[in-house]
Image 1 (tube, helix red, strand yellow):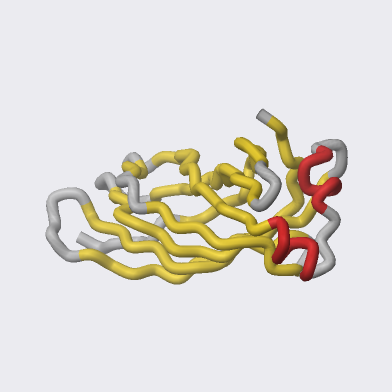
Image 2: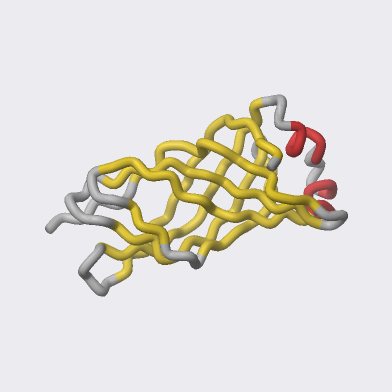
Length: 137
């Protein structure tokens, strides 16, 4: 059995879940392809998110997500943004929540995956970048 790491295709959607005076909470949806003849299990992921080249926030996902064999899947990753840090970094928060323009998002980090039926975990670094509109929910 030969394992091929899941391939991150694109960030397909960024949803603003809620915002407070101090933080914004996003859900980043990523399209992933599994070219294996067996399911791959995403055990956890730690990542940083950048907007138009500037650090936006970080996230971690400890909820188990199944990436079905020989298929494309959409996985969701939560992100917490400190609005103070965003303003300090020169980000225009109105651009982020406006939803009317295409912005370049980048996700970079490490994921722990497991092959279904095998006990070993693999740590896989990843980086993905593309333009997408932010959607308000």
